[in-house]
Each structure stands twice: as structure tokens, then as C-alpha cells.
Image (cartoon, rainbow, N blue to C red):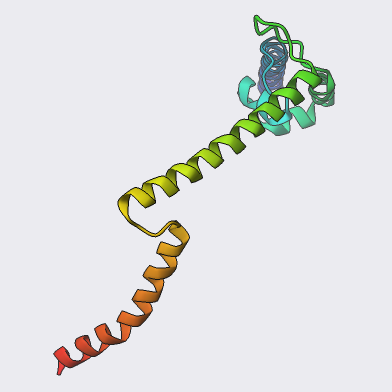
Length: 149
């Protein structure tokens, strides 16, 4: 009879723990939806402080996560939401800006190179230094070899 009582107590404690974990998962899922955070099994499990396997064992929780992940984000960021065309336009403007800045960077490098009296291209400098190193290496080898004798 004492064994049966212990078993019942352990089972009751396990059910209570499972209920608390379930509640933490549901709370984490609601928070993620409200804040517009990432909704994945891993992210919700991490936020709830449970193992991912807990979500996979409780199919209703797993399904709830997948359903919420499939829904479009509804988080209120305080400002108007961006439409797809406006995002595409922003991307095009960013690309144009990167192109302009890259061109400007190249021009500035050329002007600096001319001002310092260097070769007009860093690639040429790299090639020249490799050439010089290739030519000097045998002499360094000879000097190092002759000083060892």
C-alpha cells in the first residue's frame, strides 16, 4: 500500500510538472506572437525553458506552434507596416547607394594612390610585391645558407 501511495504521488507530481511546462509553452507562444518574435519549435522551447522533445511529445502544442508560425506577423511596431512594393523600392535604393559608394571608394583609392605616388591599383601593388618576393627569395636563401656555413 505504501508503494502505491508513492507511485500515485510521483505520478501526480509528474502531471503537475507537465501542466506547468505546458502553460509556459503557451505563454511563450503568446508572447512571441505579440512581440513579433521568431516562432519556431526551437525558439518557443527556448523561451519556455523546456526541451524541444517536450513539444514533439505533446502534439497539440507542436501543432499550435506550427499554426502560429504559418500565420503572418501581426506585431505592432509603433509605425506603419511596410508593403512588399515599398520593401522592393528600399532594396533597389540600397543597391544603388552601394554601387555609388563602391564607385566613390574606387575613385578615392585612385586619387590617394596618385597623390602618394604609388601604383594606380592595389592589385598591381600586390602583384609587384609578390614578384619582388619571388625574385628576392633565392638571394635570401643563399644568404641564410651561406651564413650557416
